[in-house]
Image (tube, rainbow, N blue to C red; front, side):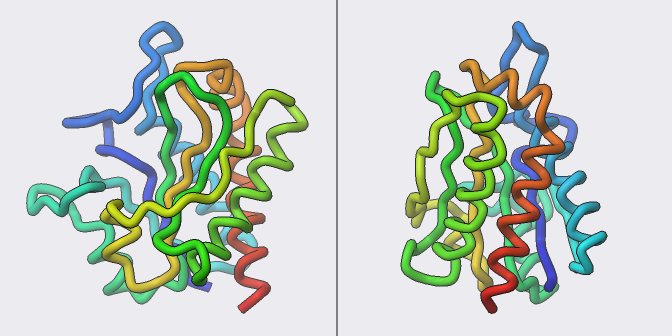
Length: 185
């Protein structure tokens, strides 16, 4: 299986680091890259081919940055996973797909299930925010393969402890979700 991983926001945080927790010195772009890189290594160990690209162009394509959707489409990826961190004071994970009843919805459910079961062990307050449709998200709208955007947790809530201490567990949960999906093909 060919898996395209897209850690959210700009590489190095310039021009946009995504969500930031100033007091904890954490940035979404860094968490997403660490989790994505770990997931990529674990996927390769599982026999998958992996391509990883962190680029700043979620809502609109910008010629100044590589097009993640264009790269994934040209590479003919089997699945596309964009990795993000939420903000706004909530708790838990949520996974977006273009349409819940298609292959992207099935991929989203596999990943969401693994994230929740893996991380609630460490924090019972980590909520299952569910699978949601995000038809306005560029990475879901412009990809040719099943695609999801995963929000791992909230950088401005108690989730920050999970985001700091359990990045490897998050990466392994993503991989289990992706391979669960792959087994159903």
